[in-house]
Amino acid sequence: QGLKPIVSTESPAPIFGTTSKLASDFPATDSYLAKNKVPDLQKIFQKADGLPVHLKRGVPDRLLYRTTMALTIGGTIYCLVALYMASQPRQH
Image (cartoon, rainbow, N blue to C red; front, side, top):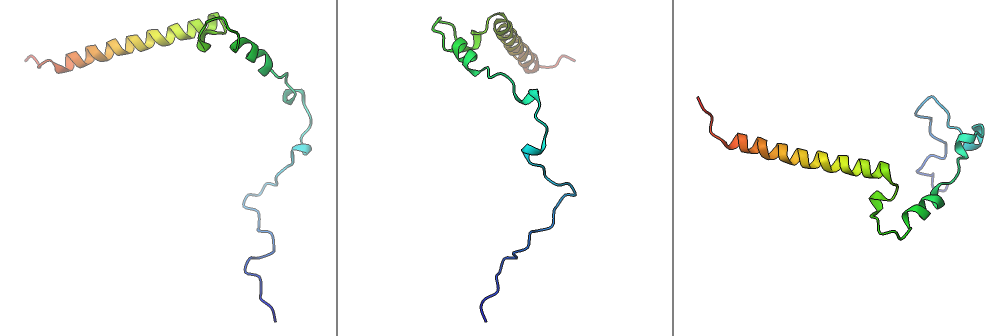
């Protein structure tokens, strides 16, 4: 007599109507074979030139950094002015 298996040995029915494809089924295209840029970026970011890492790539990084700082300072000033105006009593 033996024990019957508790778990079904049949594969379950697919949940979605689509079948899965293997990576080998897709056509090989050049978009997947892009040049590895990591060694070039490592040379840039590991150079001992005294610059912080967020400014290593030159003008675009400086522009982004200065824009972020301007928005941060402007937003802080705006919030302080709004807080000051909200703390004043209303004049009828």
